[in-house]
Length: 340
Image 1 (spheres, rainbow, N blue to C red):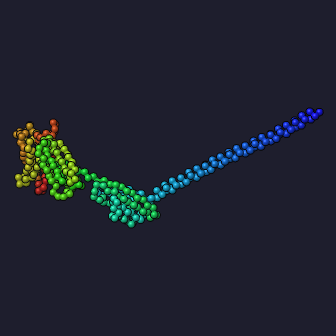
Image 2: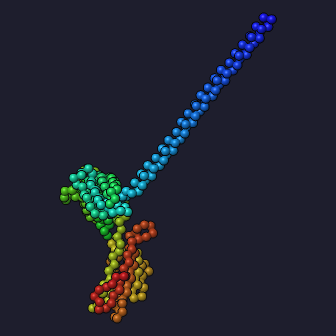
Image 3: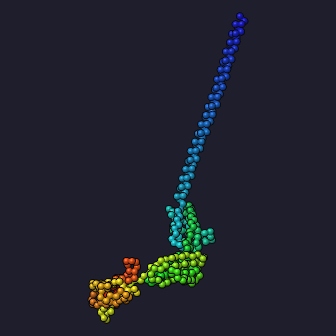
């Protein structure tokens, strides 16, 4: 009997312990669940805060960019365009009036030029020297400003120019450093020196006689800084025939003179509609004759016309010789002849 009671009491005690353990386990589980929920909620809050901050930053960046773009659009636009070696053109593009335009060269602010009226365009001379930097500042009527700096380089190199003048050649040397001398020679012949006639002479000219046939002209120019420039030109120099037409009213004739130092292959005349050809088929033709004179009667009361085309014996190439053309109109009583 005592043994049975002890067993029942023991079972009741064990049952109470199990319920107590179950309650403790349930309590621990609830605490863990609350802790996890709190962590998840905190993470969500942090993510939400990051999203809000990101949106705000993007909006701020967009606003700043828009404000910057608007500010740039409201600034006067400056353009600098070079006109030539000695002058630039400055243009201002702006919807409002311009209250002040300021410019200076290089770093010399003591030479600042200022225009205090609505200037939208101005030409500015470039100072002497090879390199110059132009600074331009502009202020609009609304207070907006802009500035532009541009460096301009002047070409200080030596240039050599050649111009043919009938039987002569003009040589022109130029340099802003000043020309010291010009030297020229034909082929391998002895050189001829032409010195400058003044200090800082920027241009030096000389005229030389051309050599007939194919020859090479060498030109060397030296500036005041010791720089040199050379030019080599192969020239095929020939001479055109010379033609003159004159009226002699006393004798009622026109006198036509044709000359060339190498003679003629042929000469074609058209006088008042009548054609004459002087060539190997013409009676008295002489290919070596260097000067020929022809006459024709003048007709009163009308315009006397004459056209002469002369071909010399001097060759330009294998198929062509030098030639010249002259057309004139002559009326009796008029002391002048009209060249067509």
